[in-house]
Image (cartoon, rainbow, N blue to C red):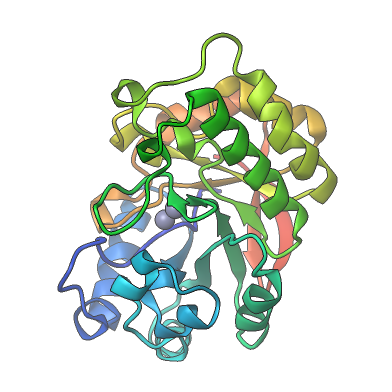
Length: 278
Ligand SMILES: [Zn+2]
Ligand SMILES: [Zn+2]
């Protein structure tokens, strides 16, 4: 079994309205590519910030820029016009756990993908002049990484999520941003305090291969720590177009095989089960 759950039906671009992308025909384009690539379990997880109801959780300028669509229309579309699993990529916003829970509770997800894209108000993976960026404040890389991995622990521990997405996203820029020196496991340890305790499924994401860093998320030493703790693995590409589906999976499956992972997680109605990998 191969899965791709962390999938977006459209690029993160302006002019990507739901009437063009949340259609049975577009879902079918994804299903066709997934079938060609041997991916039987396919689901979608649109970014929360694309929905106007996200502003009930957080009024960050980045969210206010994007929040336009109706989340219940999205859920109805996925359920009624596609055979895809229904998920959402839900940011962790510290201090807004109750509002996130209220947003999630009213809707029938198959799974919820939890992401840390912001440390406090500062974005990890976005550049722009209208919002703060983690690298724009003159903090030392040690401080940025520490806060990022502490936030990841908090997200896992919140119990809001089924899958922890792109666990070391902070490395996304590769050499374009400063990185702490030495053995990075001291940062992964900070996250593991929450991840191990929560039992959350941890995403192995091939999206990092498309980014400046050019690596899988998470780094192999981090993945080893996740496996030592006994957390299960979820496999996804973070596709934003049909051709991204399953991209880089040979590499991901090889690494997982090397580390003795024989099973991956499958979700339905927020219930988790394990299926053989491959
Ligand atoms: Zn993400
Ligand atoms: Zn995503």
